[in-house]
Image (cartoon, rainbow, N blue to C red; front, side, top):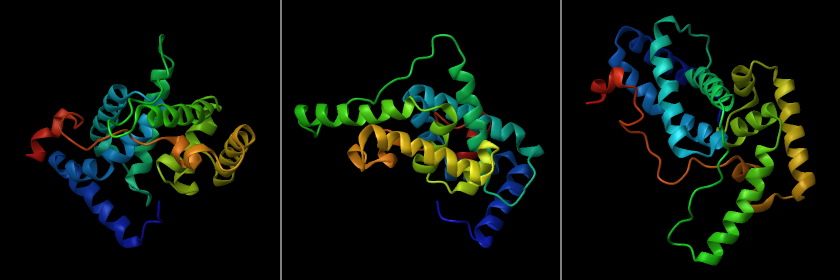
Length: 214
Protein backbone atom coordinates (compact mmCIF):
# COMPACT_ATOMS: atom_id res chain seq x y z
CA UNK A 1 0.00 0.00 0.00
CA UNK A 2 1.44 3.34 -1.05
CA UNK A 3 2.32 5.81 1.65
CA UNK A 4 -0.54 8.22 2.33
CA UNK A 5 0.05 11.85 1.44
CA UNK A 6 -0.69 14.61 3.94
CA UNK A 7 -3.69 15.60 1.82
CA UNK A 8 -5.08 12.06 1.90
CA UNK A 9 -4.63 11.82 5.65
CA UNK A 10 -6.33 15.17 6.13
CA UNK A 11 -9.23 14.01 3.95
CA UNK A 12 -9.59 10.92 6.12
CA UNK A 13 -9.44 12.98 9.30
CA UNK A 14 -12.30 15.09 7.97
CA UNK A 15 -14.32 11.95 7.15
CA UNK A 16 -13.84 10.72 10.71
CA UNK A 17 -14.85 14.06 12.19
CA UNK A 18 -17.98 14.09 10.03
CA UNK A 19 -18.88 10.54 11.09
CA UNK A 20 -18.35 11.42 14.74
CA UNK A 21 -20.95 14.16 14.36
CA UNK A 22 -23.37 12.19 12.17
CA UNK A 23 -23.42 8.38 12.24
CA UNK A 24 -24.85 8.27 8.71
CA UNK A 25 -21.60 9.86 7.51
CA UNK A 26 -19.77 6.63 8.46
CA UNK A 27 -20.77 5.18 5.06
CA UNK A 28 -17.79 6.65 3.11
CA UNK A 29 -15.34 5.10 5.60
CA UNK A 30 -17.15 1.78 5.33
CA UNK A 31 -17.08 1.84 1.52
CA UNK A 32 -13.40 2.82 1.50
CA UNK A 33 -12.24 -0.11 3.63
CA UNK A 34 -14.81 -2.92 3.56
CA UNK A 35 -13.20 -4.85 0.69
CA UNK A 36 -9.72 -4.62 2.25
CA UNK A 37 -10.95 -5.80 5.64
CA UNK A 38 -12.98 -8.62 4.12
CA UNK A 39 -9.98 -9.81 2.08
CA UNK A 40 -7.77 -9.82 5.17
CA UNK A 41 -10.29 -11.75 7.28
CA UNK A 42 -10.97 -14.21 4.47
CA UNK A 43 -7.24 -14.84 4.14
CA UNK A 44 -7.08 -15.83 7.80
CA UNK A 45 -10.31 -17.87 7.94
CA UNK A 46 -10.80 -19.27 4.40
CA UNK A 47 -14.53 -19.21 5.22
CA UNK A 48 -16.58 -16.73 3.21
CA UNK A 49 -19.64 -16.73 5.48
CA UNK A 50 -17.53 -16.33 8.61
CA UNK A 51 -15.45 -13.61 6.92
CA UNK A 52 -18.61 -11.65 6.12
CA UNK A 53 -19.84 -12.03 9.71
CA UNK A 54 -16.52 -10.89 11.17
CA UNK A 55 -16.34 -8.02 8.67
CA UNK A 56 -19.78 -6.87 9.79
CA UNK A 57 -18.73 -7.15 13.44
CA UNK A 58 -15.55 -5.18 12.71
CA UNK A 59 -17.44 -2.24 11.23
CA UNK A 60 -20.14 -2.43 13.89
CA UNK A 61 -17.35 -2.09 16.46
CA UNK A 62 -15.87 0.75 14.43
CA UNK A 63 -19.19 2.57 14.48
CA UNK A 64 -19.69 1.92 18.19
CA UNK A 65 -16.23 3.18 19.15
CA UNK A 66 -16.15 6.08 16.70
CA UNK A 67 -17.13 8.77 19.27
CA UNK A 68 -14.08 7.77 21.34
CA UNK A 69 -11.69 7.40 18.40
CA UNK A 70 -8.68 9.72 18.59
CA UNK A 71 -6.93 10.76 15.38
CA UNK A 72 -3.18 10.03 15.53
CA UNK A 73 -2.18 10.71 11.96
CA UNK A 74 -2.38 7.10 10.74
CA UNK A 75 -5.06 5.62 8.45
CA UNK A 76 -8.31 4.58 10.11
CA UNK A 77 -7.82 1.18 8.48
CA UNK A 78 -4.97 0.44 10.91
CA UNK A 79 -7.45 0.49 13.78
CA UNK A 80 -9.97 -1.59 11.79
CA UNK A 81 -7.34 -4.23 11.00
CA UNK A 82 -6.50 -4.47 14.70
CA UNK A 83 -10.19 -4.96 15.57
CA UNK A 84 -10.53 -7.60 12.84
CA UNK A 85 -7.42 -9.41 14.10
CA UNK A 86 -8.81 -9.56 17.62
CA UNK A 87 -12.18 -10.85 16.42
CA UNK A 88 -10.55 -13.59 14.32
CA UNK A 89 -8.37 -14.59 17.28
CA UNK A 90 -11.51 -14.85 19.41
CA UNK A 91 -13.11 -17.10 16.78
CA UNK A 92 -10.04 -19.35 16.75
CA UNK A 93 -10.36 -19.92 20.49
CA UNK A 94 -13.92 -21.22 20.15
CA UNK A 95 -14.47 -25.01 20.29
CA UNK A 96 -14.98 -26.59 16.90
CA UNK A 97 -12.91 -24.06 14.93
CA UNK A 98 -12.14 -25.53 11.51
CA UNK A 99 -9.73 -24.06 8.96
CA UNK A 100 -11.25 -24.35 5.49
CA UNK A 101 -9.49 -24.61 2.17
CA UNK A 102 -10.20 -22.64 -1.00
CA UNK A 103 -13.63 -22.49 -2.59
CA UNK A 104 -14.85 -24.16 -5.76
CA UNK A 105 -13.07 -23.53 -9.01
CA UNK A 106 -14.38 -21.23 -11.73
CA UNK A 107 -16.73 -22.78 -14.30
CA UNK A 108 -14.46 -21.42 -17.05
CA UNK A 109 -11.59 -23.73 -16.10
CA UNK A 110 -11.30 -27.28 -17.35
CA UNK A 111 -11.74 -29.87 -14.56
CA UNK A 112 -8.13 -31.06 -14.77
CA UNK A 113 -6.68 -27.54 -14.80
CA UNK A 114 -8.94 -26.52 -11.95
CA UNK A 115 -7.92 -29.51 -9.83
CA UNK A 116 -4.21 -28.97 -10.48
CA UNK A 117 -4.38 -25.25 -9.75
CA UNK A 118 -6.50 -25.82 -6.63
CA UNK A 119 -4.14 -28.51 -5.32
CA UNK A 120 -1.05 -26.35 -5.82
CA UNK A 121 -2.71 -23.29 -4.30
CA UNK A 122 -3.99 -25.31 -1.34
CA UNK A 123 -0.50 -26.71 -0.76
CA UNK A 124 0.84 -23.18 -0.38
CA UNK A 125 -2.11 -22.01 1.71
CA UNK A 126 -1.67 -25.03 3.97
CA UNK A 127 1.95 -24.04 4.49
CA UNK A 128 0.90 -20.49 5.34
CA UNK A 129 -1.69 -21.79 7.82
CA UNK A 130 1.02 -23.86 9.52
CA UNK A 131 3.09 -20.75 10.28
CA UNK A 132 3.02 -19.35 13.83
CA UNK A 133 0.09 -16.99 14.33
CA UNK A 134 2.19 -13.82 14.40
CA UNK A 135 4.07 -14.77 11.22
CA UNK A 136 0.83 -15.68 9.43
CA UNK A 137 -0.74 -12.36 10.44
CA UNK A 138 2.29 -10.39 9.25
CA UNK A 139 2.27 -12.18 5.88
CA UNK A 140 -1.49 -11.67 5.45
CA UNK A 141 -1.23 -7.95 6.18
CA UNK A 142 1.83 -7.54 3.95
CA UNK A 143 0.54 -9.36 0.89
CA UNK A 144 -3.26 -9.66 1.15
CA UNK A 145 -3.61 -6.27 2.81
CA UNK A 146 -0.75 -4.76 0.77
CA UNK A 147 0.37 -2.83 3.83
CA UNK A 148 3.68 -1.21 4.68
CA UNK A 149 5.74 -2.36 7.66
CA UNK A 150 4.86 0.80 9.60
CA UNK A 151 1.13 0.10 9.25
CA UNK A 152 1.57 -3.57 10.14
CA UNK A 153 3.56 -2.59 13.23
CA UNK A 154 0.76 -0.26 14.31
CA UNK A 155 -1.84 -3.00 13.90
CA UNK A 156 0.16 -5.75 15.61
CA UNK A 157 1.55 -3.56 18.37
CA UNK A 158 5.12 -4.42 17.36
CA UNK A 159 8.12 -2.44 16.20
CA UNK A 160 8.87 -2.17 12.47
CA UNK A 161 11.99 -4.24 13.05
CA UNK A 162 9.95 -7.00 14.66
CA UNK A 163 7.52 -6.99 11.73
CA UNK A 164 10.38 -7.25 9.22
CA UNK A 165 11.79 -10.19 11.19
CA UNK A 166 8.42 -11.97 11.33
CA UNK A 167 7.94 -11.57 7.57
CA UNK A 168 11.51 -12.68 6.85
CA UNK A 169 11.11 -15.81 8.98
CA UNK A 170 7.77 -16.65 7.38
CA UNK A 171 9.10 -16.28 3.83
CA UNK A 172 12.25 -18.21 4.71
CA UNK A 173 10.11 -21.10 5.95
CA UNK A 174 8.02 -21.05 2.78
CA UNK A 175 11.06 -20.86 0.50
CA UNK A 176 12.66 -23.83 2.27
CA UNK A 177 9.51 -25.84 1.70
CA UNK A 178 8.83 -24.86 -1.90
CA UNK A 179 12.05 -23.33 -3.20
CA UNK A 180 12.03 -20.01 -5.06
CA UNK A 181 9.78 -18.80 -6.48
CA UNK A 182 6.78 -20.13 -4.59
CA UNK A 183 4.15 -22.01 -6.63
CA UNK A 184 1.40 -20.01 -8.31
CA UNK A 185 2.77 -16.54 -7.80
CA UNK A 186 4.49 -16.82 -4.45
CA UNK A 187 3.67 -15.20 -1.16
CA UNK A 188 1.07 -12.80 -2.54
CA UNK A 189 -1.02 -15.67 -3.88
CA UNK A 190 -0.23 -17.71 -0.75
CA UNK A 191 -1.74 -15.02 1.40
CA UNK A 192 -4.93 -15.47 -0.61
CA UNK A 193 -7.48 -13.32 -2.37
CA UNK A 194 -10.85 -12.27 -1.07
CA UNK A 195 -12.65 -14.89 -3.09
CA UNK A 196 -14.76 -14.54 -6.21
CA UNK A 197 -17.04 -11.60 -6.60
CA UNK A 198 -17.01 -10.01 -3.16
CA UNK A 199 -18.20 -6.43 -3.18
CA UNK A 200 -19.31 -4.01 -0.51
CA UNK A 201 -23.04 -4.20 0.09
CA UNK A 202 -25.90 -3.94 2.56
CA UNK A 203 -25.57 -7.51 4.01
CA UNK A 204 -22.24 -6.53 5.62
CA UNK A 205 -23.12 -2.95 6.50
CA UNK A 206 -23.77 -2.48 10.24
CA UNK A 207 -27.55 -2.10 10.61
CA UNK A 208 -27.19 1.00 12.78
CA UNK A 209 -26.40 3.16 9.75
CA UNK A 210 -27.89 1.18 6.87
CA UNK A 211 -30.34 4.01 6.26
CA UNK A 212 -27.41 6.35 5.69
CA UNK A 213 -26.57 4.57 2.42
CA UNK A 214 -30.03 5.00 0.95
